[in-house]
Image (cartoon, rainbow, N blue to C red; front, side, top):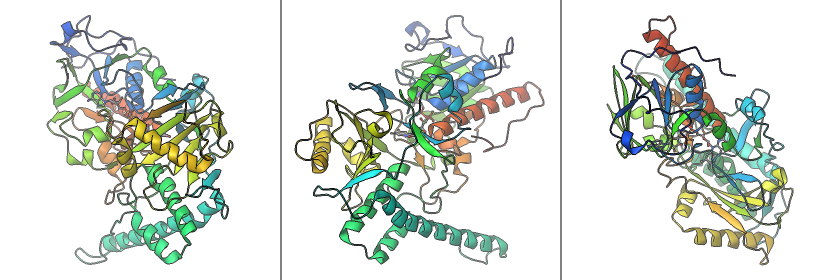
Length: 501
Ligand SMILES: Cc1cc2nc3c(=O)[nH]c(=O)nc-3n(C[C@H](O)[C@H](O)[C@H](O)COP(=O)(O)OP(=O)(O)OC[C@H]3O[C@@H](n4cnc5c(N)ncnc54)[C@H](O)[C@@H]3O)c2cc1C
């Protein structure tokens, strides 16, 4: 539980007086009134972005008695948490869906429990029904055997490579300057895979299953092409040591709850952020302007990677854009009844190549008893599908599904097609370690720049997750409080970079 707010937080020198009507708590239903557009509205802290990171930061800061204004471009809160009702009942997630690493100390557990939300049983990644390209069930290996046999070999291969790289780095640091081993060379994760595949002499059928696994275990999970993913950093983006659950009713219940009582300005597209020793100013499309001594910026990495979208003055260090931003897209399809194997967590198709189109469908029936299949596409495959219209996308889905279930498979009664890469307020799904990224990249992404603080999934030690984003918001709220206390002459000092979240 957040601490009780102090009676009144003293505004810092430089904070502009608050115009009485400028900041109205609970104004979550629209942008600022036009009449206020020209004047600069003041707060103690500006939070840019009402995703789970921004809302966590705002809630924590507001609980300390600060005047916080949250600027959000969309007409809803939640950002990459976005759940929609289905015609068959229940809700499904178009963004994040799993609480990864569900254990007793999961950071989202208190929120989920307080809201009384149920979670599904743990997702069983070994429960899959695999089909051959021409139809018919793959019979010679179970999904579990495939995973044990092939991905473990692949991961062992990468582990060996990383050990060799660490040994080379240790030798280089022990040697006198200019001598010693060459610095470790990072390679795309595709390289060890292909090397292994070449030496493995697999049958065509086994190769297709290996491609399926490469695609699901790496490209879909990490939302990037195997040619972009760092082999040295593969596995660094650790989740918590347990399994994944789905949240019944959808993940955005969490952000709905966090937003309650906060001053969130929906429909406020921030275009410029300037800062100096006296404070931060944020300007939004339409002319609204905001000022505060501090800001917490939670813009997605994909947005930061396009510097013309939100212009920073002075410009941000290049390191703020240096990790990879990938894409994971979903095609959510709803039927009145399931026609597919009901208890297999995943319905998959062997893959003739690495393109991975329509190769994996998550079966919501197995976990939440919803007659819903969710096709997952990543990276280049996802970008290719984003360029097509919904009707064409669904045609592709039906062709694949009829290859699995026969010509009688009916079209879905409802569908949703996501386009996270094209979304101007996300520009992708989540971050990944690109080839050559150093291990401490998340610290560079999260380090403050003057009075600007940075939170969001990409800045977290658990990147690419909702709980990592949440913790990063709390981390930056604490940093802002420490910086305020230190400026006000208190003894508190800002925690060093990368200490939490
Ligand atoms: C398809 C998909 C599947 C995923 N699956 C999982 C999963 O199963 N489990 C998991 O833990 N995580 C998953 N994730 C990742 C998870 O959703 C994110 O890590 C998390 O939601 C990020 O939160 P955030 O607050 O950092 O960013 P966001 O939620 O993106 O919040 C940033 C906010 O900034 C706003 N914004 C952008 N530009 C501007 C602007 N110019 N002005 C004002 N506001 C702006 C955005 O609209 C957004 O609301 C998934 C993500 C996607 C897209």
